Image 1 (cartoon, one colour):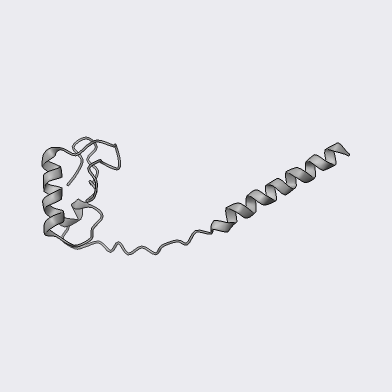
Image 2 (cartoon, helix red, strand yellow):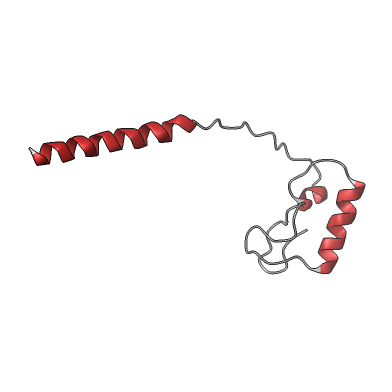
Length: 89
């Protein structure tokens, strides 16, 4: 199913186009609910049901380094403190 305004594929969960922010029509919402109830398969886009071959959406997850941001902030603060001390002298 595609957005009436921009033509991009609509999500299988939610009622708003992720590309332009337009709300789905009542018919699209009804079709989405019927499809989700009848099909227990997890898909990201309703347009995938019209494909001949299913897409492989098992993308590897990238691990985020939560400590890297904190370390960078501490280093910047230490450098600023050193610069401030050197200017006072």
